[in-house]
Structures are given as structure tokens and as C-alpha cells.
Image (cartoon, rainbow, N blue to C red; front, side, top):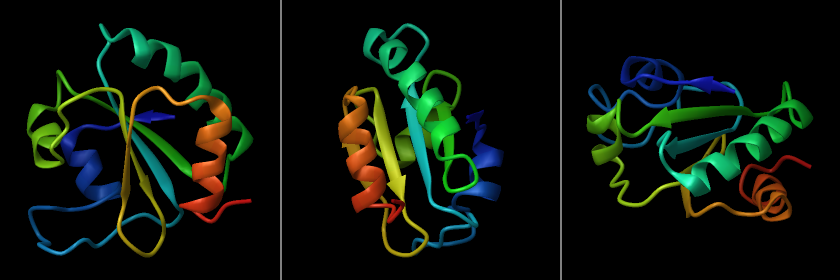
Length: 117
């Protein structure tokens, strides 16, 4: 898992300053977790995402965005509650999921949305 700044996000996920329409910059599907250090559900989700990051290493990227440090990025994506995750397939639009989902639900989303079995 990697923490992203706004500049990192524009390089690895989507450069919203250059593109009006969604244009994914990554080379494999990813999950972007919008979180805050003080958020209890975010703290519960973090080890699950770390485990999934190892399980799916080389198949998907998992990124984290601290909403307190990256306020502009959070507001651009309309993040109003945390944790909020973007599931971003190689092609197609990202899908937003809110809340600290159980591991099984995350794995189902990885299979269904990101097409990773």
C-alpha cells in the first residue's frame, strides 16, 4: 500500500488538471482508500487492505489518501464520509464504496469491479 499526495494521484491515477473526462493513468486496477488517522472505521479497514495488498500483489495497486492532508483531492471526489474507497478498473469508470466493508465484500468487489479473480 502506498500513501498518495495530490501530485502522486495525478501521476498514478488521474490527472484532473489536464483531463476533464476520466482517463485512468495506472497500468493495473487499483483501490484508493480515502481515510483519516482519527477515524475508527478507517483504522479497522487498514489492516484488511494491507492483507489484500499482499494477496493481490502485482495484480492491483492499493493506495491511501489522507483526507486531512489532501483536502483538495478529497473535495474533488466529493468525499463526505470516511472511509470511502474508489475501485478503479483498467477501463471504465471508478465505483465508489463507503464504509469499512468486511474482507469478503472487498474481495467480491475486487472480482466483480476490478475483474481480478
